[in-house]
Length: 150
Image 1 (tube, one colour):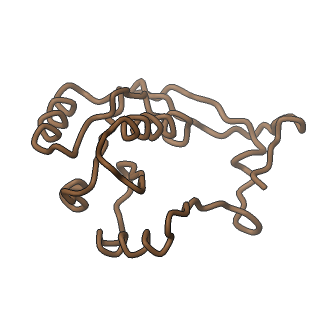
Image 2 (cartoon, helix red, strand yellow):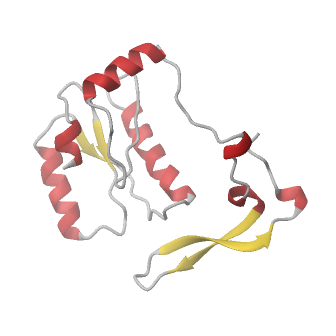
């Protein structure tokens, strides 16, 4: 449904399938990608843990694949499965033209800073489904290991 909503023939689409994805989903995604010359599966798959580095690694895998493509492109927008664009494609194009090549990476500073994200230790825990979850602990990191995002 997401691809149907955002698809434009002039754009490139990289689909990263979590390594946990079953054969049915993988087969369906391959079949879908085969219908379009601008949709492809990421060459490497990650065991994605929400909130963990593997989520970023999945994006980096698609970025590396995009850089190897001969088709020209200007912007890369990542859309995890739990997100849905609130702007139409035309609105996004207008916004990107206004940005004129600059990045739009939101930082959290001041009152919006969430110290719990960097002051406390986090650990991976296996769930009942066998997936790893990243959970926060109530244990503070050592002072020398705390790096503020400022």
